[in-house]
Image (cartoon, rainbow, N blue to C red):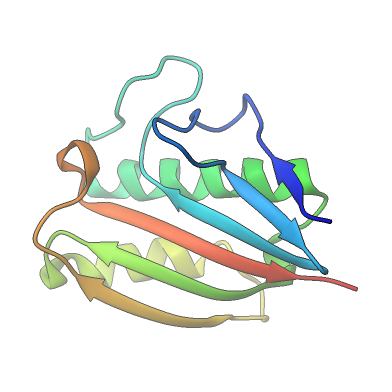
Length: 126
């Protein structure tokens, strides 16, 4: 049976979805953007801070589910412009030690709330 994961330490879903679902050892996480869960406001003072907020939100969901970044097996990074790749990639990489997941990074025409970065993850543990 699937287990639904939601935490107040990450932004609440704004549609008919959950922050994450555990199914058979896999944790499927919805995309996170740079909304500060304490204020409900976007964090967009800089691309660096926006990316860190996305990663903090993902970490909060991982922890709520009993997982960590070391369990992440796949990520998808959505960017508003591929020119942002280098800075986002550097920050994203700093959250992993030496276990890097599979990943794709794509530039898209638009993201929710006009953000520059959205990241989703899949994690696994026995």
